[in-house]
Length: 624
View 1 (cartoon, helix red, strand yellow):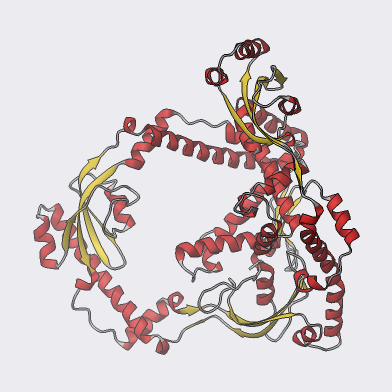
View 2: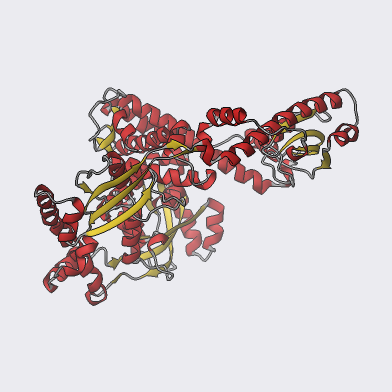
Protein backbone atom coordinates (compact mmCIF):
# COMPACT_ATOMS: atom_id res chain seq x y z
CA UNK A 1 0.00 0.00 0.00
CA UNK A 2 2.74 2.47 0.92
CA UNK A 3 4.68 1.44 -2.15
CA UNK A 4 1.72 2.38 -4.41
CA UNK A 5 1.33 5.75 -2.67
CA UNK A 6 5.00 6.61 -3.08
CA UNK A 7 5.07 5.51 -6.70
CA UNK A 8 2.17 7.85 -7.51
CA UNK A 9 3.35 11.04 -5.82
CA UNK A 10 7.08 10.97 -5.01
CA UNK A 11 8.75 9.47 -8.06
CA UNK A 12 10.31 12.79 -8.97
CA UNK A 13 11.98 13.00 -5.55
CA UNK A 14 13.63 9.59 -5.74
CA UNK A 15 17.01 10.86 -6.93
CA UNK A 16 17.19 13.40 -4.11
CA UNK A 17 16.58 10.78 -1.45
CA UNK A 18 19.15 8.48 -3.06
CA UNK A 19 21.75 11.25 -2.73
CA UNK A 20 20.78 11.62 0.93
CA UNK A 21 21.33 7.89 1.42
CA UNK A 22 24.82 8.06 0.00
CA UNK A 23 25.74 11.17 1.99
CA UNK A 24 24.46 9.54 5.16
CA UNK A 25 27.21 6.89 4.96
CA UNK A 26 29.74 9.57 5.92
CA UNK A 27 27.84 10.41 9.08
CA UNK A 28 27.35 6.99 10.60
CA UNK A 29 29.78 4.60 8.91
CA UNK A 30 32.17 2.36 10.80
CA UNK A 31 34.90 0.10 9.43
CA UNK A 32 33.95 -3.05 7.53
CA UNK A 33 35.44 -6.45 7.91
CA UNK A 34 34.24 -9.86 6.81
CA UNK A 35 35.75 -12.51 8.99
CA UNK A 36 35.76 -16.18 9.68
CA UNK A 37 34.82 -16.80 13.29
CA UNK A 38 35.67 -19.88 15.30
CA UNK A 39 32.99 -19.81 17.91
CA UNK A 40 32.22 -23.50 17.85
CA UNK A 41 29.25 -25.60 16.77
CA UNK A 42 26.84 -24.18 19.32
CA UNK A 43 26.57 -20.74 17.72
CA UNK A 44 23.01 -19.45 17.35
CA UNK A 45 24.03 -16.97 14.61
CA UNK A 46 25.63 -17.38 11.21
CA UNK A 47 26.36 -13.70 10.58
CA UNK A 48 26.31 -10.25 12.16
CA UNK A 49 25.54 -7.11 10.14
CA UNK A 50 26.04 -3.91 12.09
CA UNK A 51 23.80 -4.30 15.14
CA UNK A 52 21.77 -7.09 13.55
CA UNK A 53 22.26 -10.84 13.76
CA UNK A 54 21.24 -13.51 11.27
CA UNK A 55 20.07 -16.46 13.35
CA UNK A 56 21.05 -20.01 12.47
CA UNK A 57 17.43 -21.13 12.51
CA UNK A 58 16.43 -18.38 10.07
CA UNK A 59 19.27 -19.37 7.75
CA UNK A 60 18.19 -23.01 7.99
CA UNK A 61 14.60 -22.05 7.18
CA UNK A 62 15.64 -20.08 4.09
CA UNK A 63 17.84 -22.94 2.92
CA UNK A 64 15.01 -25.46 3.35
CA UNK A 65 12.73 -23.25 1.24
CA UNK A 66 15.39 -22.97 -1.46
CA UNK A 67 16.03 -26.72 -1.37
CA UNK A 68 12.32 -27.30 -1.94
CA UNK A 69 12.38 -25.08 -5.01
CA UNK A 70 15.47 -26.83 -6.38
CA UNK A 71 13.84 -30.26 -5.94
CA UNK A 72 10.93 -29.10 -8.05
CA UNK A 73 13.44 -28.51 -10.86
CA UNK A 74 15.95 -31.34 -10.32
CA UNK A 75 13.91 -34.02 -8.54
CA UNK A 76 13.66 -35.28 -4.98
CA UNK A 77 17.21 -36.68 -4.94
CA UNK A 78 18.69 -33.16 -4.91
CA UNK A 79 20.64 -32.87 -1.62
CA UNK A 80 22.59 -30.38 0.47
CA UNK A 81 25.95 -31.43 -0.98
CA UNK A 82 24.73 -30.62 -4.49
CA UNK A 83 23.32 -27.33 -3.24
CA UNK A 84 26.71 -26.37 -1.81
CA UNK A 85 28.47 -27.37 -5.02
CA UNK A 86 26.11 -25.10 -6.99
CA UNK A 87 26.73 -22.19 -4.62
CA UNK A 88 23.13 -22.10 -3.36
CA UNK A 89 24.09 -22.08 0.32
CA UNK A 90 26.37 -19.07 -0.17
CA UNK A 91 23.74 -17.31 -2.32
CA UNK A 92 21.09 -17.68 0.40
CA UNK A 93 23.50 -16.37 3.04
CA UNK A 94 24.53 -13.35 0.96
CA UNK A 95 20.88 -12.51 0.19
CA UNK A 96 20.08 -12.52 3.92
CA UNK A 97 23.13 -10.31 4.58
CA UNK A 98 21.99 -7.87 1.89
CA UNK A 99 18.51 -7.65 3.46
CA UNK A 100 20.12 -6.98 6.83
CA UNK A 101 22.33 -4.26 5.29
CA UNK A 102 19.26 -2.47 3.94
CA UNK A 103 17.49 -2.79 7.31
CA UNK A 104 20.51 -1.25 9.02
CA UNK A 105 20.60 1.51 6.44
CA UNK A 106 16.94 2.29 7.10
CA UNK A 107 17.51 2.35 10.85
CA UNK A 108 20.48 4.71 10.57
CA UNK A 109 18.46 7.08 8.40
CA UNK A 110 15.82 7.20 11.13
CA UNK A 111 13.08 5.58 9.01
CA UNK A 112 10.22 4.07 11.02
CA UNK A 113 7.07 2.08 10.34
CA UNK A 114 4.02 2.79 12.48
CA UNK A 115 2.42 -0.18 14.30
CA UNK A 116 -0.91 0.51 12.61
CA UNK A 117 0.73 0.25 9.16
CA UNK A 118 2.25 -3.15 10.04
CA UNK A 119 -1.09 -4.43 11.35
CA UNK A 120 -2.92 -3.19 8.26
CA UNK A 121 -0.35 -4.74 5.91
CA UNK A 122 -0.85 -8.11 7.60
CA UNK A 123 -4.64 -7.77 7.59
CA UNK A 124 -4.57 -6.94 3.86
CA UNK A 125 -2.52 -10.02 2.97
CA UNK A 126 -4.80 -12.37 0.94
CA UNK A 127 -3.02 -15.35 2.50
CA UNK A 128 -4.64 -14.50 5.83
CA UNK A 129 -8.11 -13.63 4.52
CA UNK A 130 -11.37 -15.48 4.05
CA UNK A 131 -13.07 -15.85 0.68
CA UNK A 132 -14.97 -12.67 1.54
CA UNK A 133 -11.69 -10.74 1.86
CA UNK A 134 -11.68 -10.28 5.66
CA UNK A 135 -8.75 -11.04 7.97
CA UNK A 136 -8.96 -14.46 9.67
CA UNK A 137 -6.90 -15.04 12.79
CA UNK A 138 -7.01 -18.86 12.45
CA UNK A 139 -5.61 -18.71 8.90
CA UNK A 140 -2.91 -16.33 10.15
CA UNK A 141 -1.91 -18.64 13.03
CA UNK A 142 -1.99 -21.71 10.80
CA UNK A 143 0.21 -20.07 8.18
CA UNK A 144 2.75 -19.01 10.82
CA UNK A 145 2.88 -22.51 12.30
CA UNK A 146 3.47 -24.06 8.88
CA UNK A 147 6.23 -21.56 8.16
CA UNK A 148 7.80 -22.04 11.60
CA UNK A 149 7.31 -18.44 12.79
CA UNK A 150 6.00 -17.08 16.06
CA UNK A 151 3.67 -14.09 15.79
CA UNK A 152 6.36 -11.78 17.15
CA UNK A 153 8.92 -13.07 14.65
CA UNK A 154 6.57 -12.55 11.73
CA UNK A 155 5.61 -9.03 12.78
CA UNK A 156 9.30 -8.16 13.14
CA UNK A 157 9.98 -9.57 9.66
CA UNK A 158 7.08 -7.59 8.19
CA UNK A 159 8.28 -4.39 9.86
CA UNK A 160 11.78 -4.92 8.46
CA UNK A 161 10.35 -5.61 5.01
CA UNK A 162 8.36 -2.36 5.06
CA UNK A 163 11.43 -0.47 6.23
CA UNK A 164 13.50 -1.94 3.39
CA UNK A 165 10.82 -0.92 0.88
CA UNK A 166 10.99 2.65 2.14
CA UNK A 167 14.78 2.63 2.09
CA UNK A 168 14.98 1.24 -1.45
CA UNK A 169 12.20 3.36 -2.93
CA UNK A 170 14.67 5.79 -4.61
CA UNK A 171 16.32 2.84 -6.34
CA UNK A 172 13.04 1.19 -7.32
CA UNK A 173 11.35 4.37 -8.57
CA UNK A 174 14.29 6.19 -10.13
CA UNK A 175 15.13 3.73 -12.90
CA UNK A 176 15.01 4.20 -16.66
CA UNK A 177 16.33 2.28 -19.69
CA UNK A 178 17.21 3.82 -23.10
CA UNK A 179 14.81 2.92 -25.91
CA UNK A 180 17.63 1.72 -28.14
CA UNK A 181 18.78 -0.83 -25.58
CA UNK A 182 15.20 -2.11 -25.17
CA UNK A 183 14.74 -2.55 -28.92
CA UNK A 184 18.07 -4.38 -29.31
CA UNK A 185 17.18 -6.84 -26.58
CA UNK A 186 13.65 -7.26 -27.98
CA UNK A 187 15.12 -8.28 -31.34
CA UNK A 188 17.59 -10.65 -29.69
CA UNK A 189 14.92 -12.35 -27.60
CA UNK A 190 12.29 -12.62 -30.33
CA UNK A 191 14.43 -13.61 -33.29
CA UNK A 192 13.32 -16.97 -34.70
CA UNK A 193 15.00 -19.51 -36.91
CA UNK A 194 14.01 -22.45 -39.09
CA UNK A 195 16.33 -25.44 -39.44
CA UNK A 196 16.68 -28.95 -40.77
CA UNK A 197 17.42 -31.38 -37.95
CA UNK A 198 19.12 -34.75 -38.47
CA UNK A 199 18.48 -37.10 -35.54
CA UNK A 200 20.65 -40.16 -34.85
CA UNK A 201 18.94 -42.15 -32.03
CA UNK A 202 21.33 -44.06 -29.84
CA UNK A 203 19.05 -47.08 -30.24
CA UNK A 204 20.15 -47.22 -33.90
CA UNK A 205 23.76 -47.82 -32.85
CA UNK A 206 24.41 -51.52 -33.37
CA UNK A 207 27.32 -53.79 -32.63
CA UNK A 208 27.94 -52.76 -29.01
CA UNK A 209 29.31 -55.90 -27.30
CA UNK A 210 28.15 -57.14 -23.92
CA UNK A 211 30.31 -55.72 -21.12
CA UNK A 212 32.75 -57.96 -19.33
CA UNK A 213 32.78 -58.21 -15.54
CA UNK A 214 35.89 -56.05 -15.57
CA UNK A 215 34.05 -53.40 -17.62
CA UNK A 216 31.21 -53.33 -15.06
CA UNK A 217 33.59 -53.13 -12.09
CA UNK A 218 35.46 -50.22 -13.69
CA UNK A 219 32.28 -48.34 -14.65
CA UNK A 220 30.81 -48.85 -11.18
CA UNK A 221 34.02 -47.59 -9.58
CA UNK A 222 34.26 -44.52 -11.85
CA UNK A 223 30.62 -43.51 -11.27
CA UNK A 224 30.18 -44.04 -7.54
CA UNK A 225 27.98 -40.97 -7.15
CA UNK A 226 25.38 -42.53 -9.44
CA UNK A 227 25.07 -45.53 -7.15
CA UNK A 228 25.39 -44.02 -3.67
CA UNK A 229 22.75 -43.81 -0.95
CA UNK A 230 22.46 -40.95 1.58
CA UNK A 231 22.88 -41.39 5.31
CA UNK A 232 19.50 -41.93 6.98
CA UNK A 233 18.51 -42.19 10.62
CA UNK A 234 15.82 -43.85 12.69
CA UNK A 235 14.75 -41.39 15.39
CA UNK A 236 12.31 -40.79 18.21
CA UNK A 237 11.10 -37.19 18.35
CA UNK A 238 9.73 -35.75 21.59
CA UNK A 239 8.01 -32.36 21.47
CA UNK A 240 6.56 -30.07 24.11
CA UNK A 241 4.41 -27.45 22.33
CA UNK A 242 1.83 -24.96 23.58
CA UNK A 243 -0.89 -26.44 21.37
CA UNK A 244 -0.37 -29.84 23.03
CA UNK A 245 -1.58 -28.51 26.40
CA UNK A 246 -3.67 -25.49 25.39
CA UNK A 247 -6.99 -27.18 26.14
CA UNK A 248 -5.92 -27.70 29.77
CA UNK A 249 -5.39 -23.98 30.40
CA UNK A 250 -8.06 -21.95 32.27
CA UNK A 251 -8.63 -18.39 31.01
CA UNK A 252 -10.74 -16.06 33.24
CA UNK A 253 -13.20 -13.64 31.63
CA UNK A 254 -11.27 -10.74 33.14
CA UNK A 255 -8.18 -11.75 31.13
CA UNK A 256 -10.25 -11.87 27.95
CA UNK A 257 -11.63 -8.38 28.59
CA UNK A 258 -8.18 -6.98 29.37
CA UNK A 259 -6.72 -8.52 26.18
CA UNK A 260 -9.57 -7.07 24.12
CA UNK A 261 -9.01 -3.60 25.56
CA UNK A 262 -5.26 -3.79 24.96
CA UNK A 263 -5.65 -4.94 21.34
CA UNK A 264 -8.51 -2.77 20.14
CA UNK A 265 -6.51 -1.65 17.12
CA UNK A 266 -6.38 -5.26 15.96
CA UNK A 267 -10.13 -5.73 16.30
CA UNK A 268 -10.94 -2.39 14.74
CA UNK A 269 -10.90 -1.20 11.17
CA UNK A 270 -10.21 2.52 10.67
CA UNK A 271 -12.21 4.66 8.31
CA UNK A 272 -10.95 4.21 4.76
CA UNK A 273 -11.29 6.49 1.76
CA UNK A 274 -10.53 6.11 -1.92
CA UNK A 275 -8.31 9.11 -2.56
CA UNK A 276 -7.49 10.55 -5.97
CA UNK A 277 -5.07 13.43 -6.45
CA UNK A 278 -3.56 15.80 -8.98
CA UNK A 279 -0.09 17.16 -8.14
CA UNK A 280 0.97 20.68 -9.25
CA UNK A 281 4.37 22.38 -9.04
CA UNK A 282 3.00 25.59 -7.51
CA UNK A 283 -0.05 27.11 -5.84
CA UNK A 284 -1.07 29.21 -8.83
CA UNK A 285 -1.44 26.17 -11.10
CA UNK A 286 -3.32 24.24 -8.42
CA UNK A 287 -5.70 27.10 -7.69
CA UNK A 288 -6.40 27.71 -11.41
CA UNK A 289 -7.32 24.05 -11.83
CA UNK A 290 -9.47 24.18 -8.69
CA UNK A 291 -11.39 27.17 -10.09
CA UNK A 292 -12.04 25.33 -13.35
CA UNK A 293 -13.45 22.31 -11.50
CA UNK A 294 -15.49 24.54 -9.16
CA UNK A 295 -17.12 26.12 -12.23
CA UNK A 296 -18.27 22.74 -13.48
CA UNK A 297 -15.41 21.43 -15.59
CA UNK A 298 -15.03 17.65 -15.40
CA UNK A 299 -12.44 16.54 -12.81
CA UNK A 300 -11.34 13.65 -15.05
CA UNK A 301 -10.53 16.09 -17.86
CA UNK A 302 -8.35 18.23 -15.59
CA UNK A 303 -6.71 15.11 -14.15
CA UNK A 304 -5.85 13.86 -17.65
CA UNK A 305 -4.39 17.24 -18.55
CA UNK A 306 -2.06 17.54 -15.55
CA UNK A 307 -1.57 13.89 -14.66
CA UNK A 308 -2.79 12.21 -11.52
CA UNK A 309 -4.65 9.15 -10.36
CA UNK A 310 -6.00 7.11 -7.48
CA UNK A 311 -3.69 6.72 -4.50
CA UNK A 312 -5.74 3.80 -3.20
CA UNK A 313 -8.28 2.88 -0.55
CA UNK A 314 -6.42 4.35 2.41
CA UNK A 315 -6.80 4.92 6.11
CA UNK A 316 -5.53 8.22 7.48
CA UNK A 317 -2.52 6.51 9.06
CA UNK A 318 -1.47 5.05 5.70
CA UNK A 319 -0.99 8.50 4.17
CA UNK A 320 2.60 9.35 5.17
CA UNK A 321 2.26 13.11 4.61
CA UNK A 322 0.17 14.56 7.49
CA UNK A 323 -1.08 17.57 5.48
CA UNK A 324 -2.59 15.28 2.85
CA UNK A 325 -4.05 12.93 5.45
CA UNK A 326 -5.77 15.77 7.27
CA UNK A 327 -7.17 17.22 4.04
CA UNK A 328 -8.29 13.87 2.64
CA UNK A 329 -10.22 13.00 5.81
CA UNK A 330 -11.74 16.48 6.14
CA UNK A 331 -13.05 16.51 2.56
CA UNK A 332 -16.63 15.61 1.71
CA UNK A 333 -17.28 12.58 -0.51
CA UNK A 334 -17.28 13.35 -4.25
CA UNK A 335 -16.01 16.89 -3.59
CA UNK A 336 -12.63 18.33 -4.59
CA UNK A 337 -10.49 19.82 -1.84
CA UNK A 338 -8.99 23.29 -1.82
CA UNK A 339 -5.31 23.23 -2.94
CA UNK A 340 -3.23 21.50 -0.26
CA UNK A 341 0.52 22.25 0.15
CA UNK A 342 3.02 19.51 1.00
CA UNK A 343 6.80 19.02 0.65
CA UNK A 344 6.07 17.53 -2.79
CA UNK A 345 4.10 20.45 -4.25
CA UNK A 346 0.42 21.43 -4.32
CA UNK A 347 -2.40 18.88 -4.45
CA UNK A 348 -6.06 18.69 -5.34
CA UNK A 349 -7.71 15.74 -3.62
CA UNK A 350 -10.99 14.00 -4.42
CA UNK A 351 -12.72 11.39 -2.27
CA UNK A 352 -14.84 8.91 -4.26
CA UNK A 353 -15.80 6.42 -1.56
CA UNK A 354 -15.85 6.30 2.26
CA UNK A 355 -15.89 3.13 4.35
CA UNK A 356 -16.83 3.89 7.94
CA UNK A 357 -14.66 2.77 10.84
CA UNK A 358 -15.80 -0.43 12.53
CA UNK A 359 -15.02 -2.47 15.61
CA UNK A 360 -15.68 -6.13 16.39
CA UNK A 361 -17.72 -6.78 19.51
CA UNK A 362 -15.95 -8.79 22.21
CA UNK A 363 -18.54 -11.57 21.94
CA UNK A 364 -17.49 -12.12 18.30
CA UNK A 365 -13.82 -12.59 19.16
CA UNK A 366 -14.06 -14.18 22.61
CA UNK A 367 -13.07 -17.68 21.44
CA UNK A 368 -10.16 -16.34 19.44
CA UNK A 369 -8.89 -14.29 22.38
CA UNK A 370 -9.29 -17.18 24.80
CA UNK A 371 -7.23 -19.43 22.50
CA UNK A 372 -4.47 -16.85 22.13
CA UNK A 373 -4.23 -16.24 25.87
CA UNK A 374 -4.26 -19.97 26.51
CA UNK A 375 -1.41 -20.43 24.03
CA UNK A 376 0.65 -17.79 25.85
CA UNK A 377 -0.04 -19.37 29.22
CA UNK A 378 0.71 -22.81 27.81
CA UNK A 379 4.07 -21.50 26.62
CA UNK A 380 4.82 -20.32 30.15
CA UNK A 381 3.79 -23.72 31.54
CA UNK A 382 6.26 -25.41 29.21
CA UNK A 383 9.18 -24.04 31.22
CA UNK A 384 8.00 -26.05 34.19
CA UNK A 385 7.30 -29.09 32.00
CA UNK A 386 10.77 -28.89 30.45
CA UNK A 387 12.26 -28.76 33.94
CA UNK A 388 10.40 -31.91 34.96
CA UNK A 389 11.57 -33.62 31.78
CA UNK A 390 15.21 -32.79 32.52
CA UNK A 391 14.76 -34.01 36.10
CA UNK A 392 13.54 -37.35 34.71
CA UNK A 393 16.61 -37.57 32.47
CA UNK A 394 18.83 -36.68 35.41
CA UNK A 395 17.23 -39.50 37.36
CA UNK A 396 18.38 -42.04 34.80
CA UNK A 397 15.29 -42.31 32.59
CA UNK A 398 15.70 -42.44 28.82
CA UNK A 399 14.16 -39.64 26.79
CA UNK A 400 11.37 -41.93 25.63
CA UNK A 401 10.67 -43.16 29.18
CA UNK A 402 10.56 -39.59 30.50
CA UNK A 403 8.18 -38.59 27.72
CA UNK A 404 5.78 -41.41 28.50
CA UNK A 405 5.71 -40.58 32.21
CA UNK A 406 4.92 -36.93 31.48
CA UNK A 407 2.46 -37.81 28.68
CA UNK A 408 4.40 -35.85 26.06
CA UNK A 409 4.05 -35.95 22.29
CA UNK A 410 6.25 -38.81 20.97
CA UNK A 411 6.77 -39.54 17.26
CA UNK A 412 8.72 -42.52 15.90
CA UNK A 413 10.34 -42.00 12.50
CA UNK A 414 11.84 -45.12 10.94
CA UNK A 415 13.88 -43.43 8.21
CA UNK A 416 14.73 -39.77 7.61
CA UNK A 417 17.50 -38.13 5.59
CA UNK A 418 19.22 -34.78 6.11
CA UNK A 419 16.54 -32.96 4.09
CA UNK A 420 13.70 -34.37 6.19
CA UNK A 421 12.44 -36.92 3.64
CA UNK A 422 11.22 -40.50 3.97
CA UNK A 423 12.47 -43.36 1.70
CA UNK A 424 9.84 -42.41 -0.92
CA UNK A 425 11.17 -38.85 -1.07
CA UNK A 426 8.22 -37.26 0.77
CA UNK A 427 8.92 -34.59 3.37
CA UNK A 428 7.80 -35.18 6.94
CA UNK A 429 5.34 -32.59 8.24
CA UNK A 430 6.55 -30.19 10.96
CA UNK A 431 10.18 -31.26 10.49
CA UNK A 432 11.97 -27.98 11.21
CA UNK A 433 15.63 -27.22 10.40
CA UNK A 434 16.44 -27.15 14.13
CA UNK A 435 15.10 -30.67 14.65
CA UNK A 436 16.91 -32.02 11.57
CA UNK A 437 20.19 -30.51 12.68
CA UNK A 438 19.78 -32.01 16.16
CA UNK A 439 18.89 -35.42 14.70
CA UNK A 440 22.04 -35.55 12.58
CA UNK A 441 24.37 -34.14 15.26
CA UNK A 442 23.41 -36.66 17.97
CA UNK A 443 25.26 -40.01 18.12
CA UNK A 444 23.62 -43.38 17.62
CA UNK A 445 21.77 -44.33 20.81
CA UNK A 446 22.11 -40.78 22.16
CA UNK A 447 19.84 -37.81 22.77
CA UNK A 448 20.10 -34.28 21.44
CA UNK A 449 20.18 -31.43 23.98
CA UNK A 450 16.79 -29.99 24.91
CA UNK A 451 16.13 -27.52 22.08
CA UNK A 452 13.73 -24.63 21.50
CA UNK A 453 11.13 -24.72 18.73
CA UNK A 454 10.87 -21.55 16.67
CA UNK A 455 7.09 -21.41 17.11
CA UNK A 456 7.40 -21.95 20.88
CA UNK A 457 8.07 -25.06 22.91
CA UNK A 458 10.87 -27.59 23.22
CA UNK A 459 12.07 -30.81 21.62
CA UNK A 460 14.49 -33.68 22.13
CA UNK A 461 15.61 -36.17 19.49
CA UNK A 462 16.75 -39.69 20.35
CA UNK A 463 18.74 -41.40 17.59
CA UNK A 464 17.68 -45.04 17.53
CA UNK A 465 19.85 -46.09 14.59
CA UNK A 466 22.20 -44.67 11.93
CA UNK A 467 22.35 -46.12 8.43
CA UNK A 468 25.46 -44.49 6.92
CA UNK A 469 25.83 -43.30 3.34
CA UNK A 470 27.32 -45.99 1.13
CA UNK A 471 27.94 -47.05 -2.46
CA UNK A 472 25.50 -49.82 -3.32
CA UNK A 473 27.38 -53.06 -4.07
CA UNK A 474 27.71 -53.96 -7.74
CA UNK A 475 26.03 -57.33 -7.19
CA UNK A 476 22.84 -55.56 -6.05
CA UNK A 477 22.60 -53.29 -9.10
CA UNK A 478 24.47 -55.19 -11.82
CA UNK A 479 21.60 -54.93 -14.35
CA UNK A 480 21.40 -51.17 -13.84
CA UNK A 481 25.17 -50.74 -14.23
CA UNK A 482 25.12 -52.94 -17.36
CA UNK A 483 22.41 -50.75 -18.88
CA UNK A 484 24.29 -47.55 -18.01
CA UNK A 485 27.54 -48.92 -19.49
CA UNK A 486 25.80 -49.93 -22.71
CA UNK A 487 24.12 -46.51 -23.02
CA UNK A 488 27.50 -44.81 -22.53
CA UNK A 489 29.08 -46.95 -25.25
CA UNK A 490 26.29 -46.15 -27.70
CA UNK A 491 26.64 -42.43 -26.95
CA UNK A 492 30.39 -42.57 -27.65
CA UNK A 493 29.83 -44.31 -31.00
CA UNK A 494 27.04 -41.88 -31.92
CA UNK A 495 29.40 -38.98 -31.20
CA UNK A 496 31.98 -40.39 -33.64
CA UNK A 497 29.33 -40.92 -36.34
CA UNK A 498 27.96 -37.39 -35.96
CA UNK A 499 31.44 -35.93 -36.46
CA UNK A 500 31.76 -37.94 -39.69
CA UNK A 501 28.34 -36.72 -40.86
CA UNK A 502 29.18 -33.06 -40.15
CA UNK A 503 32.37 -33.40 -42.16
CA UNK A 504 30.43 -34.90 -45.10
CA UNK A 505 27.84 -32.10 -45.06
CA UNK A 506 30.59 -29.48 -45.02
CA UNK A 507 32.12 -31.36 -47.95
CA UNK A 508 28.97 -30.82 -50.01
CA UNK A 509 26.99 -34.05 -49.60
CA UNK A 510 23.20 -33.69 -49.58
CA UNK A 511 21.48 -34.41 -46.26
CA UNK A 512 19.58 -37.50 -47.40
CA UNK A 513 22.81 -39.18 -48.55
CA UNK A 514 24.44 -38.40 -45.20
CA UNK A 515 21.55 -39.49 -42.95
CA UNK A 516 20.02 -42.46 -44.77
CA UNK A 517 22.88 -44.98 -44.64
CA UNK A 518 23.29 -44.44 -40.89
CA UNK A 519 19.62 -44.84 -39.95
CA UNK A 520 19.20 -41.16 -39.08
CA UNK A 521 16.09 -39.16 -39.96
CA UNK A 522 15.62 -35.58 -41.21
CA UNK A 523 12.93 -33.11 -40.11
CA UNK A 524 12.32 -29.45 -40.99
CA UNK A 525 11.36 -27.41 -37.93
CA UNK A 526 8.75 -24.70 -37.60
CA UNK A 527 10.09 -21.25 -36.61
CA UNK A 528 11.53 -21.53 -33.08
CA UNK A 529 13.02 -19.15 -30.51
CA UNK A 530 16.16 -19.22 -28.38
CA UNK A 531 14.01 -20.58 -25.55
CA UNK A 532 12.98 -23.57 -27.74
CA UNK A 533 9.43 -22.30 -28.17
CA UNK A 534 8.10 -23.72 -31.44
CA UNK A 535 10.28 -26.84 -31.40
CA UNK A 536 8.45 -30.16 -31.57
CA UNK A 537 11.70 -32.13 -31.13
CA UNK A 538 13.72 -32.53 -27.95
CA UNK A 539 16.71 -30.66 -29.35
CA UNK A 540 19.66 -30.32 -26.91
CA UNK A 541 20.00 -26.82 -25.48
CA UNK A 542 23.63 -26.67 -26.64
CA UNK A 543 22.52 -27.25 -30.25
CA UNK A 544 19.77 -24.59 -30.04
CA UNK A 545 22.34 -22.08 -28.76
CA UNK A 546 24.75 -23.01 -31.57
CA UNK A 547 22.05 -22.61 -34.24
CA UNK A 548 21.40 -19.03 -33.11
CA UNK A 549 25.09 -18.23 -33.55
CA UNK A 550 25.42 -20.07 -36.82
CA UNK A 551 25.13 -18.74 -40.36
CA UNK A 552 22.50 -20.38 -42.62
CA UNK A 553 23.78 -23.58 -44.25
CA UNK A 554 26.44 -24.31 -41.60
CA UNK A 555 25.99 -27.67 -39.77
CA UNK A 556 26.08 -27.66 -35.97
CA UNK A 557 25.89 -30.71 -33.68
CA UNK A 558 24.75 -31.53 -30.16
CA UNK A 559 24.27 -34.53 -27.88
CA UNK A 560 21.14 -35.50 -25.94
CA UNK A 561 20.50 -38.32 -23.51
CA UNK A 562 18.93 -40.60 -26.15
CA UNK A 563 20.12 -39.14 -29.46
CA UNK A 564 22.79 -37.05 -31.18
CA UNK A 565 21.63 -34.34 -33.61
CA UNK A 566 22.84 -32.09 -36.42
CA UNK A 567 21.10 -28.80 -37.22
CA UNK A 568 21.39 -26.58 -40.30
CA UNK A 569 19.71 -23.15 -40.27
CA UNK A 570 17.58 -22.52 -43.37
CA UNK A 571 15.91 -19.20 -42.44
CA UNK A 572 16.44 -16.30 -40.00
CA UNK A 573 13.31 -14.32 -38.97
CA UNK A 574 14.07 -10.87 -37.50
CA UNK A 575 11.17 -9.43 -35.42
CA UNK A 576 9.48 -6.12 -36.22
CA UNK A 577 9.74 -3.88 -33.14
CA UNK A 578 6.94 -1.56 -34.28
CA UNK A 579 4.47 -4.47 -34.57
CA UNK A 580 4.28 -5.17 -30.83
CA UNK A 581 4.67 -1.96 -28.86
CA UNK A 582 2.99 -3.50 -25.81
CA UNK A 583 5.62 -6.26 -25.58
CA UNK A 584 8.41 -3.70 -26.01
CA UNK A 585 7.00 -1.69 -23.10
CA UNK A 586 6.80 -4.83 -20.95
CA UNK A 587 10.44 -5.52 -21.73
CA UNK A 588 11.30 -1.93 -20.79
CA UNK A 589 9.66 -2.49 -17.39
CA UNK A 590 11.51 -5.79 -16.98
CA UNK A 591 14.84 -4.13 -17.75
CA UNK A 592 13.96 -1.38 -15.30
CA UNK A 593 13.50 -4.02 -12.61
CA UNK A 594 16.84 -5.57 -13.53
CA UNK A 595 18.49 -2.15 -13.35
CA UNK A 596 16.90 -1.59 -9.95
CA UNK A 597 18.34 -4.92 -8.77
CA UNK A 598 21.79 -3.90 -10.01
CA UNK A 599 21.50 -0.55 -8.23
CA UNK A 600 20.38 -2.36 -5.08
CA UNK A 601 23.45 -4.57 -5.29
CA UNK A 602 25.67 -1.50 -5.68
CA UNK A 603 23.97 0.13 -2.70
CA UNK A 604 24.55 -3.02 -0.66
CA UNK A 605 28.23 -2.89 -1.64
CA UNK A 606 28.46 0.71 -0.43
CA UNK A 607 26.83 -0.29 2.85
CA UNK A 608 29.37 -3.11 3.25
CA UNK A 609 32.10 -0.51 3.06
CA UNK A 610 30.61 1.27 6.06
CA UNK A 611 29.04 -1.49 8.18
CA UNK A 612 30.78 -4.32 9.95
CA UNK A 613 29.78 -7.67 8.41
CA UNK A 614 30.96 -10.82 10.18
CA UNK A 615 30.27 -14.36 8.91
CA UNK A 616 30.63 -17.38 11.20
CA UNK A 617 31.74 -19.95 8.64
CA UNK A 618 31.86 -22.69 11.24
CA UNK A 619 28.18 -22.10 12.10
CA UNK A 620 27.25 -22.02 8.40
CA UNK A 621 28.97 -25.36 7.84
CA UNK A 622 27.26 -26.97 10.84
CA UNK A 623 23.80 -25.60 10.07
CA UNK A 624 23.22 -28.70 7.90
